[in-house]
Image (cartoon, rainbow, N blue to C red; front, side):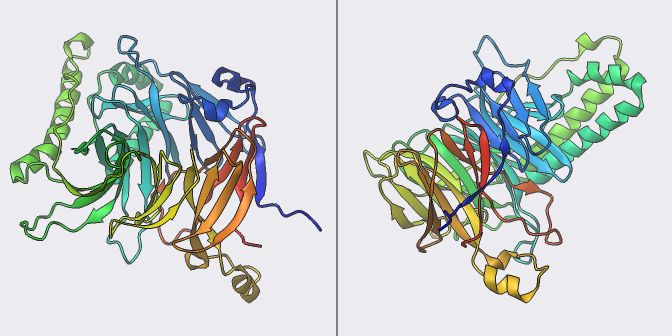
Length: 455
């Protein structure tokens, strides 16, 4: 009887450049707390404290790019503390967060697209979310959220898309106009263009270890109706295992404040551009504004769960944002309904677990028998949870919400589960791409995908 295989090997990431990240040492991928990983569909980004390496595994493009951020402050001992991909149609960029609260955006050629202070604190995680346009949403829900200890920030997806498209258009124009290239490079250091964002203080009880914005929620019942939106955020931490907050998009609930928050950045950018045209011969006359954190918008506590000595450690959000998985310090995994704010399932005995949502085919036989060229649609998939238990050396797949365990996969020591971030700009017209999970074996360098069929 042939042995069943639940993974499909895609390639290998082994290369000499990985020696700088500790490759060759046992457990280098999982034992180093300063090593960050981010996955795209055919590329892997790795970062230590001061270097970002982008590579395609053997069997795909196989390209390699090394980025060394030159703006990290040696005085503050600043280092790279968060890493993520952002994919918009044909545009791919790297998002990096620093220990001093800066958001850095790099092109795959290593060019710095944007550097912006979000809040003077260490960035713990960058989350990219993009939901397709459909009948249940008036428009696509796309955002980039940034998590810091006790703080969460949100950047509207359309704002960051416009900034990226503008930068790439200007970059392509410089290729066709070499005379302006050197002048634009000199002016790039004096650019004041920034992204509009909102930031909230969610440290009601203690600084959170992880957090996520689950989506839009209705306003309070006894509050005046406003055109501003409200978001729900879930945090995990030491004092409160789980906390939920209502985030107000309008920090002052005044028309003047809303206008200023939108107009001032654009006006300042226009004035700066005009001043550069007048004083091109004297670049020293332009000054960068003082780096200050933005004022907090209003965050209201909805509920919290305290269970000393249990501490919340990591949080994973489902694609729709209706479910969240929390791992804690006692080896438990909690499945949270983010709309009802109720724990609906609990697993025990999974210390240091890593959890990712994925989608698997449940109607494969019925669908494939109807047509040879049939391509599975969204309704053919069911939402599942992949749980990697490194101390047990296995990965399990459970059907959501209350389904059974579908399979158990043996994982080599030093392996890690990874998942590509959501893509911006997708629509219902494009083919449905299911949520997939990849398995990277750090010791061998092999990268595989977990099969999404039950057979």
